[in-house]
Image 1 (cartoon, rainbow, N blue to C red):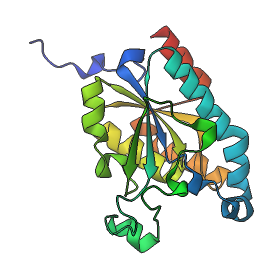
Image 2: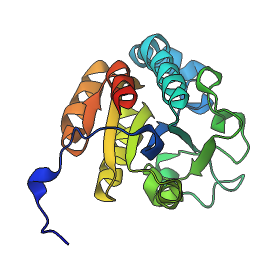
Image 3: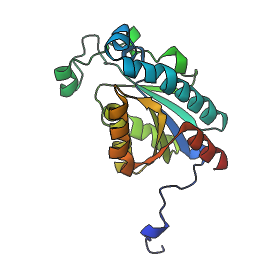
Image 4: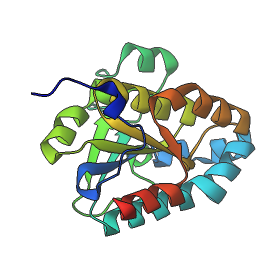
Length: 208
């Protein structure tokens, strides 16, 4: 075996579609309610005007070249949420099993054979079998999009990087409550991933 040479590793390595998964984080009905529209108008505008259309473009474009599409949603395994993480219990985060709030938003709805993993913590790698599933699929590159940029998207990027995946954040397909929070999060976790637009991501997949 040749000696390990870290200089041969590159953050901008080619994105082979067959080794790439798009991970859509928490793009669900419980994160796009009337309360969000009235209490967080900046988030609502970013979600409806930018993030959801960009997610749809990313999903369709990645699927067309053969990349895997995986969703995760906040959804308890029980009706009363007794299985949730302590943090979700303390924070009052609970979407019951089978509830309308746990369903993926229709604008970015999964196809029949896409994978949807319910989670009960902020980190999808912590409370689902995502790592096991991705390795079974032969995935090396994970493109993350969804909600919220500075919370569950952030954790997906960092945790995926620690598990040995090449992480990409599709920045315009993510949103959080303010533009400032969105920008700060991208800057904070940018060292763990490639921060790219959806157009740039799809171009990289096409070139790969």
